[in-house]
Amino acid sequence: MMHGEEETLDPADWGEFRELAHRMVDDTVEHLSTLRGRTPWQAMPESVRAGFDEPLPHGGEGCQAVYDQFRERILPYPSGNLHPRFWGWVHGTGTPLAMMSEMLAAAMNPHMAGFNQAPALVEHQVVRWLAQLMGFPVDAGGVLVAGGTMANLLGLAVARQARAGWDVREDGVQGGPQLRVYGSSETHGWARKAVELMGLGRRALRSVPVDDLDRIDLDALAAAVAGDRAAGHHPICVIGTAGSVNTGASDDLAALADFCRDEGLWFHVDGAFGAWAYTSDALRPRVAGMQRADSLGFDLHKWGYLPFECACILVRDAEMHRSAFATTAPYLTQTDRGVIAGGLPFADRGIDLTRSFKALKVWMSFKAHGVDAIVRLVEQNVAQARYLAARVESTPELELLMPVQLNVVCFRYAPAGVPEAERNGVNQEILLRLQEDGIAVPSGTMVRGRYAIRAAIVNHRSRRDDFDVLVDEVRRIGRELTGD
Image (cartoon, rainbow, N blue to C red; front, side, top):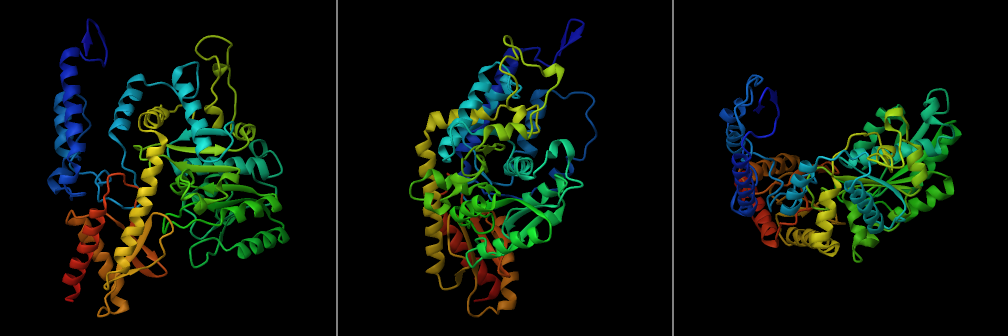
């Protein structure tokens, strides 16, 4: 916008912009309040898709025109994760209040490396609250990051510095013994990316078999660690899983904590969504031992019901956390007074210097709704998973492929008249039709070689009737496909 001879990106007419902003809010609230009346997902027409192949806009079209394009070309075509019948992958739903907190955070636009400012105090408080919720010491190290991959990567980086036996930050990983990290065959793919990125190499990640409930085989783990030591390698860390992505399984975390203590290994827990079970008295036994971890990574945009993106890494030893990342520069020198008083503590807990104000949506959500309400919703989702499993087991054409351990239900359409060799293809087609017909959005996976329709339930908008719809529609589509 022109103001005299100089320019700014602020509106030339604040009143006009205020009207547009109010319209944006009104339209968005209308969109959220009418979700149930729309389909979870719809395919994007080719005409709309083609509209994104346009040249770089050197000249502006104006705020109103761009917003109109958003409403026409973007808003109607999301993946559907806000909808009550979305249970695909482990995508969170967000909340209206958290949406508004994102606006407030963006309006303030604070730089969250630290600084002498209220937003930094909000994040300090949120990290303390999260440590308390997860059974960690309130003075544990912690920082909010983009997602579970980054949270877990940071935890593994602290483990490398703490257990390598030399200063990895100074000398790197070449020349010493090969470091080894252990996780079950159900460990999420972040671990492979992490060992590659950290220079350890893929061979550093040892995949340990699981039992019939997808929990790490402790005897096989012990044998792997002993074998690596005998071969001259240096084990540093075991990754425990609290809620596997595939089936919702959790390792025996208490036994892993004992093993790591006895073997002198760092114990990291990937609690991407399953860590939230610890907040419930009823569900805590499912992840017992998690609170003994040296580090814990988990998301708030999954079972914490917040908008993307927001996750947390907690490290029991705050000084060890800092020692893995802290650095100095003359232009970042802390002072006793002024804007940089208090330093840049969050920059010293990870690899990001510039960070957004993620903590505000956590702070506002916890204070407005109360943590107890979030815990009840976690319990509600688990009850819904058990309800869906019971519906599956009471329906002759359906088969439950894994016991429901937390909030993930894996099942398939498997009537007696359909040969086993055809069932995978039939169930994949059922899944695609559920999505394309706008009925529901579960996702698919393989369980012991069998294609599963997978419902990962982290949705605060779902009701039992929605799961009845899922069961009924799977049966209907299955019968249409097989002629039963």
